[in-house]
Every structure is written in C-alpha cells, then in structure tokens.
Length: 601
Ligand SMILES: Cc1ncc(COP(=O)(O)O)c(C=O)c1O
Image 1 (cartoon, helix red, strand yellow):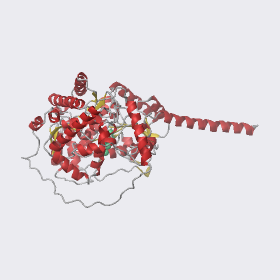
Image 2: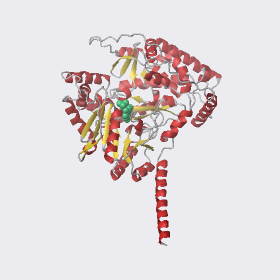
Image 3: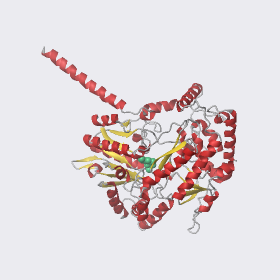
Image 4: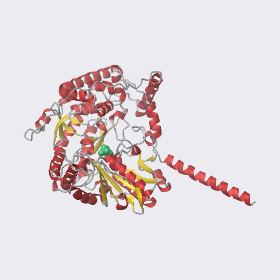
C-alpha cells in the first residue's frame, strides 16, 4: 500500500515536472515572432534553399508581366540613366571597379543593393561609385566633382555635420599630441570623458572598446558573469553588431546557442521573462521603435511593397517601462544598445528620451567624434570584472586600442561641444522639426499621387511604398541621379545630420519628389490592378521553386584558385590647408533638382 502511494506520488511529480517543462517550452515558442526573422534556425534553413537565378534583359523589364509599351518605356529610361551614369560618374566608377577586385566588402555591397534577380543587370548598367573626394556641410563630393546631399549619415555617425567631426578630430589630436599613440596608460582626456559619460548615462562606471560590436559583447559577458545565467534575449529584427550571439540566423554561419530571439512589444515575451530562470539579460536597440520586429530595411529585400514602419513614442515608452519592471522582478540585466540612437534622440540618449533607466548602456558611432569607438556604461556592481571572494573567477575584457589617446581626444571634443549653445540649439524642438519635415514631404507625395511615403524616428527615415510593385528598388537610382548620396541599403534608411537647415531640407524634398515623378513617368510603377504584395511573393516562390529543381542537377564547385597579384598604386596626394578640396555650394546648384529629368528627356 505504502509502495503504491509512493509510486503514485513519484509519478505525479514526474508528470508535473514534465508538464512544466512542456509549458515553458511552449511559452518560448509562442513568444517568437511569426516571421522568419523570429525563427533564426528556420530562417537559415530556408535561406539555404533559395537558389540563385537572375533575369535576362527581357525579363528584367517585365518581371511583373507589364505590357510591351511599358517595358519599352522602362528599357529606354534605363538606357538613359545608364548613359547619365557613364557621363557623370565615370571616374568614380572606374576607381571603384578596379578597387573592388581587392575589397570583399565592396563586392558584397554591390551584389546586395537590389533584389538578387535584378542585381547583375543593375551592376552592369548602373554601377555605384564607392569613392568620395571630400565633404562639407550636408554634402559629399565624388571623384568626378559631383556634389550630393548626404543621406547616408555615415552609418549613423554623422549627427552634427561633417565639419563638426573634422574639427573634433583635428582639435582632439592637438589635445593629445604630446602623448601620441601611447597605449596602456591613459591621457587625462579619459578622466573628462568618464565624468561626462557617467552624467549622461546616469550610471557609475565606464569601459572603452574599439567598436559598438565589442561594447555589446562586453555588456552581455558581464550580464552572464554576474547573474550566472546563460541566455540573452534580443528582439526580432534588432541589430546589435556582427558578433555571433547577437546575430543568430541569416548572416552568421554558426548555429545559435544561448540566444533567445523573441517578439518585440509582446505580452508573450514578458511572460517568458517572468517565468524562465536562465535569462541573464535583455538587449534593446531603441531604433526598433521605428519598425518593431523587422530587420533594418534594405532595398535588396524590396521584392514587393510590404515594407512597413511607424513610430509610436507612447507605445514604445510603455513597452520599455514594462521591460524595466519585469527585469527588476526577475533580476535580469536590462541593456540599452544605444550605439545607433545614442545622442541622436536627445543629448542624454534613448534613456533620457523614453525616461527609462537601463542597467547597462552601450554607445559608439558618433561618440568617437568621428573616430572608431565603443563604450559601455553600467551600474558599479555589474561592471566589476572580478569577485572579491573568488580571486581566480574573473570576467576578462581587454583590447589593444581601448582608450586610444587620439580617440579619447576626439571624444573629449565631442562631449565638450555637446554642451555648447550651438549644439544644444540643434536639439531644441528636434522631434517637431523632423516630424514636420516628414509630414510636409508626405503631403507633397500624396498631393502628387505618388505611391511613396516616409516614416521617421526623429532624423532617421525610411521610405515605404503604398501600392504593390516589384520595382520600388529602382527609386534609389533616381534619387542618386537627383543628387543624393545613399548608403548601400538604398531607400531603406535615410539618415539626416541635424545641421540640415530648412533651406537644405526643402531642396531635398524638391529633388525627392522630382525623383519619384521621373520614376513614375518612366513606367516602373505600372502595376497590374489585381496584383497584391501577396501575389508578388507567391509568384517569387514559384520562380524559386522552378530554379531550385534545375539547380539540384548543376551545382558549381567552390573555386580556391589564387588570383594574379595586383599592380602597384601610389598613395593619394596630401592636400594642403589652402587647397582643402572641399566642394563649393555652386557645384551643388549646377546639378540641379531637375537634372535627371533634363538628362532623361
Ligand atoms: C545598435 C547597434 N549596436 C551595435 C552596432 C555595432 O557597432 P559597430 O559597427 O561599431 O561594431 C551597431 C552598428 O550599426 C548598431 O547599430
């Protein structure tokens, strides 16, 4: 009898434990975002099934089954654009072509500016020059002397205008010249930087790193060390640098191990945080507020008009507050990764802007005053790299170039100038200014019945498309022709520096509308009235399936042959102060807003 009772109790306990495990596992599955980006392993598997194929010149213009007259219009426009490219950007393209053979990054970005099916024809006819000669104000100038409004934002670094950073670097170098590049010991600029960063972050201690990726690595390592838990939570679509643990899925050949990718702004995610015991930290990139659960928008993924974005400050603030509460309850480390948005939303970063205090915060990009940097700020207890009671249990972090005097000098300038009235002025009414600008442009796009609108998180913008089309990615070429410098993600991300004046912005808006109008005139936005984003995607799947069947019987071997050594080149000349090579505004005026239309007609 006693034995039976014992067996029954034991069985019930085992069942209860099994049920709990199942429940926890189910909660985790339910907290993943429904998209492929929410399922890293599956995404990598699906990616490995996508076969390469591309469109020949005929299909290129009719991949949406446009009638022949529309295809002819597109073909003629494409040829005109190609001629504009040849005439206007010849030198820059020639240098880029030659250099690309030895720069793997250039080969990669060139291949992924547009959806891969169109990439070869675009590369052959509209190659993008990747070299610049100079910068000034809100513009950059290429090797042919073309001046562009710079909407690349230098990956987000350029917050106050290029001249600001040139000054930071020059003045910073003067500050540290006597010491020079001595490493290990610190220049006194470090003490100033630490004091300012403590004020700005509201946190106790600071560590210096060489890039944003490394600052994030150290934040996560410390969180694991102090909590003695294994897993980090990141949100679907969020970028935190290219370290494997924060970039599971496509782009990272290793399988994810200790990372949970959960849905952003989701009650189910909060439930997972409340119930699991293996979560060391939650990593938040506040840029996701513009497109929760979606990866950084890139034109290479613009196969239809499904790109969505929209910033709701109140909703995101509420979400961060809920995260803060649950992290406090469960002793999970809350990390804000402000490498991108730090200083852009407010002088005190996202923490000030949303009014939520993280335990650790990472900065980078603009904070280096134009030089490479990563910074981690944190609560004292979390930043400790050793345990007083266990002397051999340490959390190691170093880096040869950490706190490099020249970087510290430029950062010192940056932080010092951040307090100046001119810079503080740029923050005044920041959101209103950039929201008004976005609204004004959207009003013009709507009034002209163009299928385009912009969404923004302050000065970070993305372009969305309102009617189904397979050719939205062409807009980046019309924008380039109108005098815009765009990053390799094209219309996915336009980053403004805060020194764009109203006059600058109005010129940008004129050119933007002109580019859209030219694109419409040239027939790229023709659409079958019954086509939808869904029907476009279904059709793409069918194409891929057809090519996959073919591919299985013709798999190419990996070539590991060596190439010929490159020819010798000379270093570029050193420019004197009298001939700094900065473009004048007149050149910009010469490449007027209507240039493309003139060239194109
Ligand atoms: C939010 C965020 N974290 C980390 C990184 C990585 O920084 P870095 O490119 O300096 O390594 C980036 C870069 O874009 C970023 O946007």
